[in-house]
Amino acid sequence: MVMPGTEHHTGMSTQVSALLDYHLRLSRVLAALHPGHPLSAARLAYGLGEAELARALLARSGSLLDSGEARRELKVPPAAELLAQAQAARHTLPTPPQAHLSDTQQEMYIRVLAGLLVSDAQQVQSFLERPAAPLSGTDPGLWRLPALPEQQRWPAGLALADQQPVHWVTASWGGRWGLRELFRTQGQGGAAELGSLEALTTTLSAHLSWDLPALPALLTRPLLLEGLETLSPGRRGAVTALLADAATLFGWTVILLPAYETVWSGLFRPLPLPSGLPLPSGAAMSAVAHAPADLQITPPGPPMFLAELAAQLRILPGRHLVMLHSRASAGRLAGMVPGSLLLSSSLCRAHLAQRMTEIAAHPAQDLTVIATTLPATPMGLFDRVYHLLAPLPHLAEAAALSRSPLQLIQLHDVAVPPAWAQATQLTMDLLSQGQSPSDPQVQRHYAEQLQAAIPQRNRSLPSQQLRSQQQYASLASELAAQRGSAVPVLIALDAEGQQVIETYRERSWLSSRDLRYAAWITSNEAQQALRSGEAKQTGSGWALVWQGRYDPNYGLAWPYVEQALAANDEHE
Image (cartoon, rainbow, N blue to C red):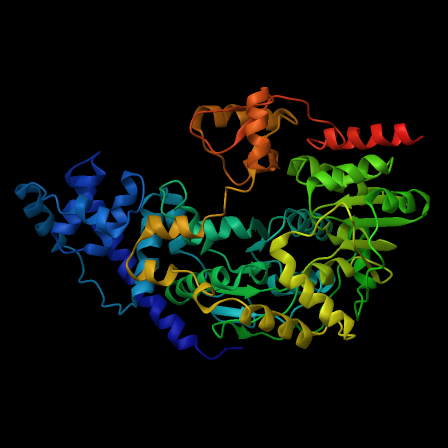
């Protein structure tokens, strides 16, 4: 089946492939003229009038630069003799094709070319030999499935992948753990490479030499993308534009697997669900068969205290999930409910994965899970899910894990984040009108109303202007995750965690995989931990190394747990 737009995508991709081949050949020629001096090669390219190659070659000196700084570096004239040799060598190469690129397409082309220039030979070969459009039923470009709960979304993704290599990106660590469990039980482990939405954004806007090779590697496989709808409208638009240019230039296929509907860009073409969609088998995905057709949410009763909620949980039989917003309140509640399981960022992700795997392998009839981030379906369904007031999408996803209507709660001693005030009020208005949170029209209406409430000047980021001006470092900074609100602390959970810490001490750099051994604390908590000696700063790196106590059950939340336990003892 060939979709509209094939000619456009394939034609542009062919031109760009030929241009890439020319630039890679010329880069080898220029590097050979002055071995070991990458900046000299960039200046030679600039002297030849090869501005795109010159900008890309700067990556071999450490990073792609903003335009002003790049001009200052490149305008230094190379030795006349070297330039003459470069001109003569260029005449031996085939004439490059004319690829008529927009400003942002040119910006993306330079970034991918830079990624290839700092990749090893095997990575370059893998990129050049990548299949054109390996997913049946699609051609290169941006596609979007209808919004689905996790129980149907993942089988749809598996059906689209059809055992072929793909990148599969999600917004949450819980989702990535759940997918690993699904791949393990379905024999899909070698076919999908998992990643985070944050890492995807970093890769698409990469400018540092150690981040750039991930971009051409990303383009060697189709992308199944979850969680784009969780981004703010401005950030979602910026990521969509990057995806679109990469897809157009390099014949790449991107398929969105949304959890709920929002205001989508017209760049995404609707894609129908795969016909005869198979459901996964095995204990890890037994919850799939019970996917709810219409999610139900019970409005909150009168506000209560955390201790009152704990008293209810202690006497209720069955499996219960409580979703809170803060690590502190989750830790306090865990201390009030003996035997409960805490899943929060107070535990490093490797530790969380271990605990969730144990639960999935040995599901308990009576279990209370207290979490700050939503568990994945392989952990099984819950008899009841309690959720503090939150935006509608949070509630809809949590309700899909409950066998009974999701119970909204209000607590005197746990506040709703102020940033959510407008979204939670709109959510309550919709629910009070009897609107179904699983109705796509309700979800779109909710998103439209939220977006309309955002001032026009705040609805988009300056990313398109930065890209048009080839301000690579500024764009990466604009799209980088905000680091002011949370700080990673590395935990020596096991031998691998200890090795991550040792490597970090040597290089002051962490890969996305290394962050599995990080728990997260606020910047104020980080300063307190540094003063007390519980954490230590290493070199110029962002993360801290934890030196203090790390509880095998509660991680860094143990002070909140012990505080709650002490309060219980006093009342008894």
